[in-house]
Image 1 (cartoon, one colour):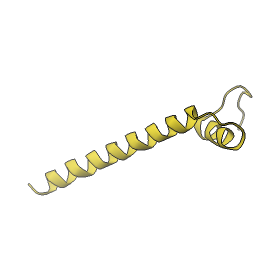
Image 2 (cartoon, rainbow, N blue to C red):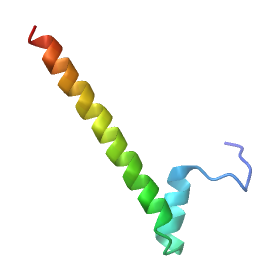
Image 3 (cartoon, one colour):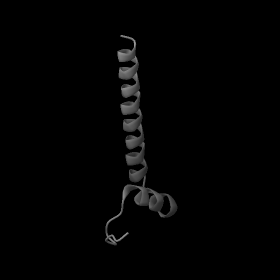
Length: 54
């Protein structure tokens, strides 16, 4: 895994923020990603169940 020392992925940034910083920005982004993913999965399940009843 060769990456630039200046490039941080979101999981690495979240872990770094939890262990070192008190900045709520990364936690807010993580929460938004979690909510968005949950809504997309829920919508997919809802659409799939409606099509299955036909």
